[in-house]
Image 1: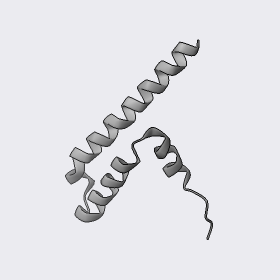
Image 2: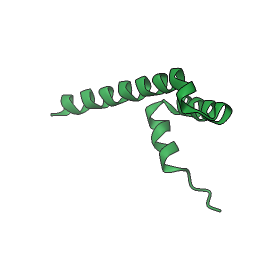
Image 3: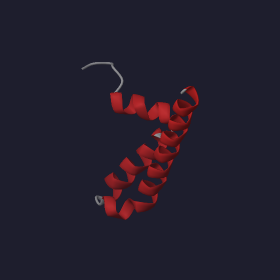
Image 4: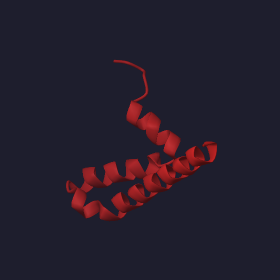
Length: 63
């Protein structure tokens, strides 16, 4: 078994949304139904959208 970091987790660490990602996973594991986890899914989605927007703004400033 490798000690390498999961590339998805590595990317999520950069976004600052990894804890919300874990909450979504925990909710799905506990309930067995992602539809029952819409609150945490929404929070995770919002976090990712905020990160994406910040990255886009940084890129536009460099242009």
